[in-house]
Amino acid sequence: MYIREMIFNDIMQNYNKKYKEYNTLEEYLNSYTRDDLYRLAVRYGIINGDNKLGEVIIANTSIKSKMLKYVVDNIEEIIKSVLLPIEDNNIEILNKVLENKNTLVIEDRRLPLTLILNLGNTPVIHVHYDKKKDLITINIQKDIALIINKILKNKAFIKEHHDLLDFEKNIEMLLEVYGLIEEDLLYDIYTKVLDNIERKIFDKYLMYITLKDCPLDRKHFNNINYISKLDLEDYEIEDYISNREGEYEIYSKDFYENVENRTYLKGLKSYENLCDFFQKYYDFDLNEEDDIFELIVCDYLYQMQESKVIARKAIITNLDQYFNINSKRKNEIINYLNRIYYDYPKWRKKGNI
Image 1 (cartoon, rainbow, N blue to C red):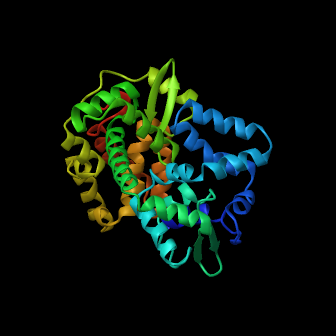
Image 2: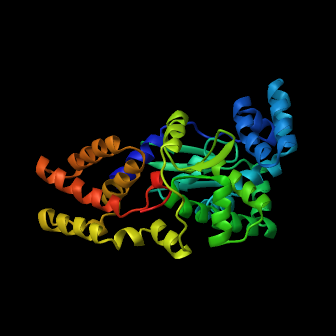
Image 3: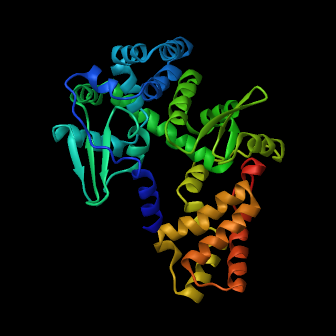
């Protein structure tokens, strides 16, 4: 809970402005800056090809009224491009706002933070957080609400939305094993192991998921496109690419699924040994404390994929924060974690164990 609270507070500190209703769509959109309108429109432009992107860029190079007119004229398609990749629980919240006359007050912080990250800084929704009362209010301007309602009831949209979410889940599953991979090879593995999708749709869906707030990025080095899960600067990723070893290991669908859902990790003898250690010395069940499990085990594995030095510093900090552990015990825990990493698919070895 502590980790979630820190993330929540960090995100919500930017949402202290109360909502103001406007009579028309144009008046409402005009209350945003030109940069806000551009950020809303540019995703639509990128996804729909060079011609649309060119239109957005041209509109943005002129005075604000040109950018405003472009967004107003294309608002339905723009909003559709924003809504298509968001999670089902985000859609559920939007429907609740619409059902409640375009305003929803949320107590106990019961909302997916991905909704805030993906839509909170756009004109699609307005988010206000009252820190004193610990209340979140979501408003949707009336014209925007009519458009959202129309889109969410469209059968073609619903099908494409679900297809895209399934695609995203599959890509994240593969990247859990590889960390970074060439787009062409990713397509080959995807069609061989998961689904025989057309390349045109594959590329479009990749664009959707890498433009929203998610851990995946598109990178381009030496005329090669990559999909990356690495939390590194571009120059570090280039160095990372040049130091990888071996050939890509291709697994069964079951293996990718088990790595992604932690079944593979929790089935390792090395993981069982770590759990036994915590149970013996600290009377602590690692499997029942999701936050601690994520912070100690998963965070260490991710950090090790990128940097052994950073991983060691991070695990020492995390252990100091949650346990009263002496240096000897810390080193024992790190040895257990290193054994888990040894048994785990490695990004620097292109998914090999």
